[in-house]
Length: 169
Image 1 (tube, rainbow, N blue to C red):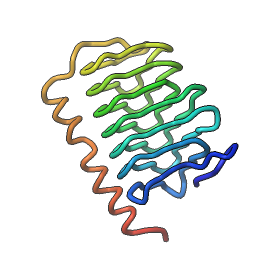
Image 2: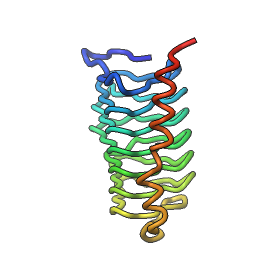
Image 3: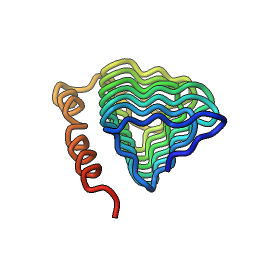
Image 4: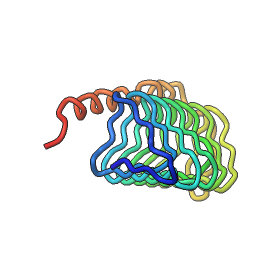
């Protein structure tokens, strides 16, 4: 469901897929070929949320913020992730059930492990692997992991296309 709030209406290109069971409200901008899957909630009621191209917001994830939030291109936000941070760069994977708290910023080509807690204000540099509660940088991603990040959303791009082709019931 797309809903206007305080005079702001979500901006969604024709190429994007928004599940009928997702809730997107207010000052939200979603990029080309991106997907928002069932149960996801994106609340641009306090501040703008900008999501890049080819980015997937998986089932039951919540994006909400009190300051402008930006999520880059080619990002996979896994199942049941809570994003309350400032920025997630491009070509990232945020693992299932991770939480990204206020004012946190994640660079490009990062992997945030499943269940990880990114503390308020944490800055994660490009090419980082972060795991744990609280999240700790374990080092740089491997060449194989970087390759996966570059191709990771390709499967989802095909899925978004099929969802759009098949329409509703």
